[in-house]
Image (cartoon, rainbow, N blue to C red; front, side):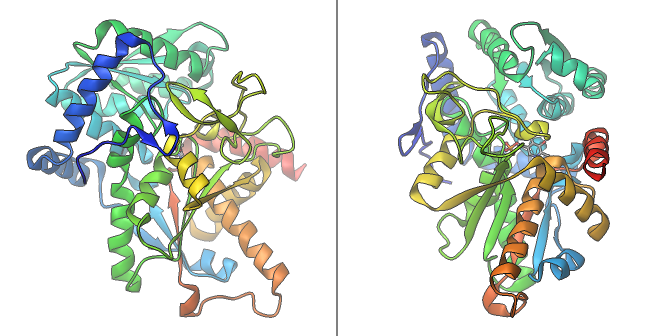
Amino acid sequence: MSSTIEERFGPYGGRFVPEVLMSALDELTVVWAETRDDPEYLAELDRLLRTYVGRPTPLYRADRLSERLGRRVYLKREDLAHTGAHKINNAVGQALLAKRMSKSRVIAETGAGQHGVATATACALLGLECVVYMGTEDMRRQASNVERMRLLGAEVAPVEAGARTLKEAVSAAIRDWVTSSDRSHYVIGSVVGPAPYPALVRDLQSVIGVEIAEQAADAEGGPPSRVIACVGGGSNAIGSFHAFLDTPGVELIGVEAGGEGLDTPRHGASLGAGRTGVLHGALSSVLADEDGQIQEAHSISAGLDYPGVGPEHAHLRDTGRARYESVTNEQALRAFREISRLEGIIPALESAHAIAWLLADADRRVAETPSSPVCFTPEFGFDVVTMSGRGDKDMAEATAGLDELDG
Ligand SMILES: *Cc1c(COP(=O)(O)O)cnc(C)c1O
């Protein structure tokens, strides 16, 4: 890794925060610049990723899914990482960083609770005090994650303001950090927020793509032709893409939450249907009205239900290096069931979005060239889809949604 930490990605990124946070962000930038190349830190991170998180996660050739698609596809199994998703990669890396900065206390925000659980886990592992801010509406909807965090020794701090969800939890966490940054480190859960967080979280998630490159070389002798991942804040996607940014010929495809459709106000497609604006301390592509007022996002999957996205994705969209598509709630639900039955893998509803796009892409190809819908020949290469997490957490939501679809 180079030692300059990007503050901007094209026009996006930056730091739109109260002046009092500038010195904490400066400190974090300096510390990360020296830490991310430090052999001692990297050796300890590598040890924990291997022996605690369970890395490298497998790259699995999904034969029955490939048969259905008429195209060879591999699944990058982040769902097999400890706590069941990629978020632990970032949480462990940042908790280790907090220790290095001699900060004994960690602050995090959480919406659905996945990032809160990952952070509480990393703090238990490293013996750090952990406070997770969570809206009371989210606490009600995600009661089992609240219990998990408490069992892991974290304090869950209820946030009563506004809609009592993620947005208010972020504000509360930032307020805490303003007064406690001398002894607290703030762990952001995705590639969002003020610099250096988008670069810091990306660096920690890049292990996904580095492993894909190695495993694809072993399995197929070279890189995939397409890498596909779902995009909420964008951390599993950028983590999957980053190793391939300079490898021409590898197509990078991010799949956003289309909710009830991009022609309705109920979706989470900040890149596909957003505008340039500021959210949570960075300039990016956001869901906002003409006056710049942030709008509510909507998705059946809590992890994609966010009105912003990491600034690096906005830049990759503009430069054309990656492209961003979306699928609806209904497509994601159907893919959730289909991949469960084809491969015996129950995916997170977030990850089901990436699979749903592949299914739709295959259907499109068959419709366009009915004579030769099968592309198993080498010139078509193969796809890698990142399974960002496992679906246990989504069983109730998905079962209810599928019952409704089946009418
Ligand atoms: C949180 C989450 C996401 C969305 O976050 P990104 O930062 O976009 O990766 C996707 N999948 C799972 C399983 C998650 O828990």
